[in-house]
Image 1 (cartoon, one colour):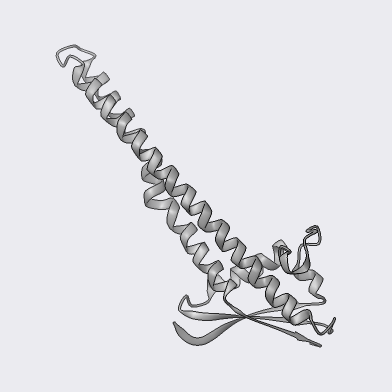
Image 2 (image 1 turned 45 degrees about the vertical axis):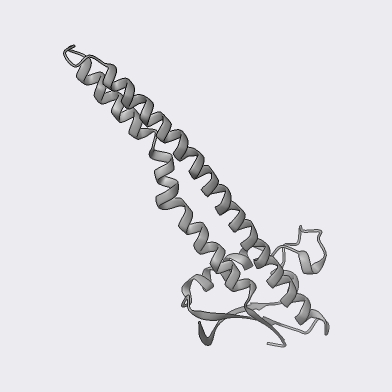
Length: 175
């Protein structure tokens, strides 16, 4: 990993702008404001994957001495929790992928076997055989979609949130 840190700068009037005002949780467990999260995650996506991340929160005025450590803990806890949720979602998606693959293969086998039972010499036989073959492969659509396309964006997001959870968080006042 690159030793240089890429900095994400967040300028706020007060620390309250960083957090979801509707969240009744204690400060260190609160969700980030949707706009603040989108800003931080969007900026992090633009930075090199191999660089460490640093989040610089600049507040208009100092609120109290404990604020920097509370903000640091809150940001890290939030992105750590988001990473855990994304990894759980990925695990569930891959479980779904395995289940749909088993179902899809069983269905494909059944319709291909059924297609072989259709008499070839009948006028409608070729159409029915082709139709059954197509139905069998359509049944494989979902497992193929999951295993080829759906899993890796979740893994990439989980990795990004891990990097954000591990980021150095600095809080400055008086900007």
